[in-house]
Amino acid sequence: MTSSLLFNVTTLAYMASMVVFFAFIASKNKSVGVAGSMIAYAGFIIQTVAIGLRWKESYDLGVGHAPLSNLYESVVFFSWTIILIFAFIDIKYKYRVVGAFVVPFALLGMTWAQLGLGNGIEPLVPALQSNWLLYHVVTCFLGYAAFAVACGISIMYLIKAKFEEGASEASAGGLMAMFPPTRVLDDLNYRAIMIGFPLLTLGIITGAAWANYAWGTYWSWDPKETWSLIVWFVYAAFLHARFTRGWVGKRAAWLSIIGFAATIFCYLGVNLFLSGLHSYGSSKM
Image 1 (tube, one colour):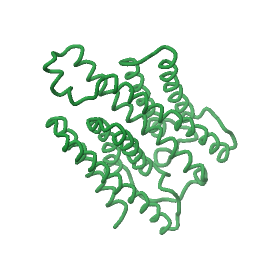
Image 2: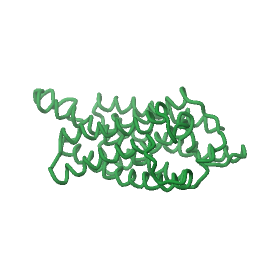
Image 3: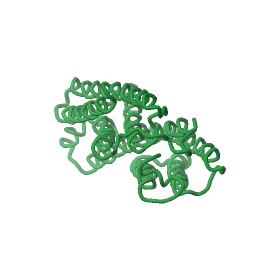
């Protein structure tokens, strides 16, 4: 059995989980919601095994590095972290409907990785040959995953708020009855960002240490570094506005969505479209 096969199984599991979560919204059957979570967890376990197996495969090939070095591996790991953060919130708060808005992010990543990216295992370029690779990538992607979850919750908030403002009570009591109250969604958005922001901060710090190891300078205003700082400022502004000006509700939800859009551009847009010290990001991290 190969890691590629298990990643394919993972993709199918996340697809099944998404479909079941949609069925949960339609049926309002709690058992269906639990099934959606269980399928997502099963996919997560399979993916965990697959990541470990790919790590072993790299050593078998004489390459021997953590499976975090190229775009394929990073997208797979990003999907894994999304389900990890989702599982934490799902187990703690048990709002199953959140899965319908978060699992699709993981499915999209896995589908793109399996269908659109090469999955070969290659030796590390010199700049990546450091333990800082592991520290930097893990902290950054856990932060990104928390922001993905916050984005999904923010979309739920905006949908729920619109129905509460403009729909009749009967309409709002139908599909919208499946959604947590807006105050709960707003709080979950905040809590997810409170998970992601310190992790992103650690990611930037470890990235600076890695940059000094690889290039002899902690900061060079490379496009990747600049956009990482932009993302950091967006979420810092979110927290500052919440603490000092009481920003909640729609403004907080939109800022969370904008922050995740900036995160995706920092992760993919910069790697694929901009040149710089991270220009090898089209195939490497």
